[in-house]
Image (cartoon, rainbow, N blue to C red):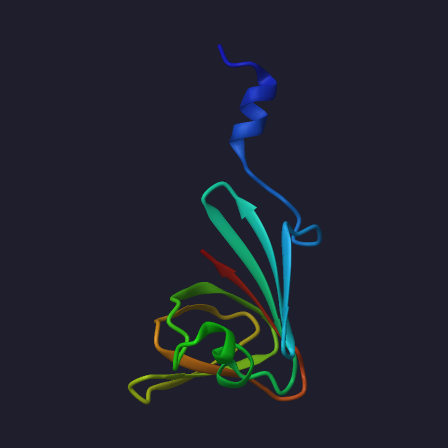
Length: 118
């Protein structure tokens, strides 16, 4: 029979996003990262005026964001434009999947906050 403390440790892996493993600051935004085994949760903050093609593209060295995003929009609004010209907008309460090959920017005067799972 498993020790109760062993069961408790493996029953759930958790960590507060308020105590992230890593914080990455970038122009008009930041990412707070919590690593749970082979999964990372990113809490992303995009201030008004943030745009991927302005603030991340120079670091990524790609024309568009080539990462697939799966997550949940906590606050604010975000506009997404795909490589093929397709467009969409996220707002608080939306769950999302964003395919690779997009640009994105904050819409309005509220900081966009989203959770992104990798």
